[in-house]
Length: 293
Image (cartoon, rainbow, N blue to C red; front, side, top):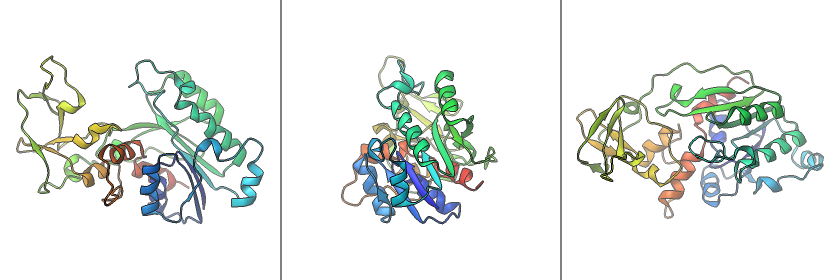
């Protein structure tokens, strides 16, 4: 298959294609984050990098794109969600500074007319934005929670013309992805408060429990992997009551990535690496969708 991946990030879709057993003849990637691109090149040196999605092809020039690369079998992408997510109080939707790039996906979708397409975005967007996307792509989304196939709660909407069903629950919890005897940083916070899925504590002294003040039970799930620097402080409550910070392999496993996939020897930047993981697809969810082809 010939693939065009927009907002490609660290090429999670390429891993999913391999796991789904789909041969890749050509993989074209559009991405502007240089750190993410370096991770992709380390793992997939044959990927053709196209740069900024706004420059992939101009309106009316889709025919020249096809002449150069051939017919596109699959168009896939997760356009920026920052202006759509409920995590942003004053969200401006599909016309926000970042989420406006959905219209670039739509433009290219119309120009390339792929055999198959997948668009991913947050499930917490407003009904208005969801309906706008659905009308533009002439299809209703399916909501899949990555909790069904991984140790992470992550609800996402997928617009696709692939006839896909909800995956069966594999029953994966943090204990299944954590190396209990691995070297890690341990912490001993004070004034712990039990929650239904772990513990929390107050480092501010003001009764405010931030994401950074929580540890999640090894017998349960972790919430959606953050894209901020807090990803390097993801904490788990072990069965013996100790609280430990996940290592990079374990954080990658939350997104169903291979161990060491995001490791760039000699140039690892914690926030950059963490952001690349948090911004990516959950690989097993995309694998499930692709297996329906």
